[in-house]
Image (cartoon, rainbow, N blue to C red; front, top):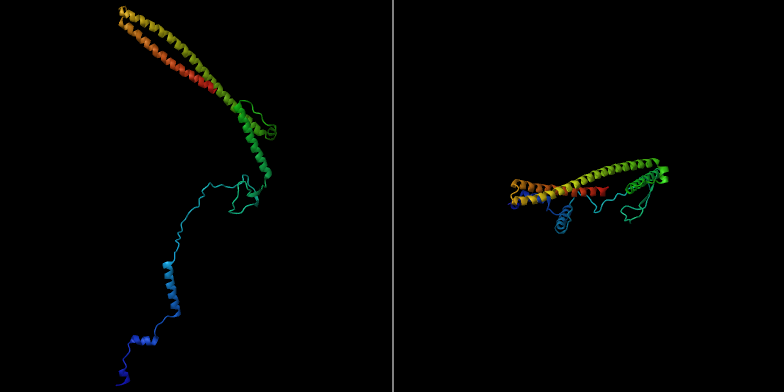
Amino acid sequence: MTEEQLTPKKSPLNQILDDLGVPGWTAPSLILFMLFVGILVWITYAQVDRVVTAPGKVVPLDKVKVVQHLEGGIIESIFVRENQVVKSGESLMSLDLATSGINRGEMRARMASLQLAKIRLEAEAEGRDPVWPEEIVQEFPQMIAAEQATYLSKRDEQRSSFEALDSTILQNRQKLAESKERSKSLEASLVIAKKELALSEGLLVDQLTSQIEHLQRESNVTSLRVTNGFFNVWRDRSNFRVWHQATRA
């Protein structure tokens, strides 16, 4: 037998392994494997904070205070920084009022208007003529004229109201006097009717009057009592109405 016949024939897979050699770990594959193992360990034992993104709005607890100058101007210098804590009354910035003369005149006009309105209202409350300051009369004559016209209009309106109220009081007093006279007349008639009823009761016992006439006298007494009571209530209400109107006047 020959040597080729004694040597077993290799399979195609073994032939490929012999040609390529035994597979092993190369440097890149070893690095990737170690990196993968490290990531697994880190995921297993590391604590990751959860971050959630959501829209929101910051709202202050206290009221928002807007720092704003009344008249405006140019910022000359700033004495504080952003997020700096300041105290009450501390200066924040200084303004250069380019129109200081105009602003001063406007402020004088406003002050004069408020002062004149105060004088007019005090005069109306105290029932006297207003006394205008001389310096305001010379500087703002148009304001004086407007306030004087307003005062005269208010005074005439009050006088008209008082005259109407006095007329109403006078009418109610006349009605009250008439009601008093009417009440006196009813009381006198009631006294006479009661006397007639008393006499009628005696005559009825002696059968000197009829039952119908006696009933008519009783009805007359009852009617006079009701009418007199109604006028007494109306007189009391009229007294209160006149007193209330007089106190308002």
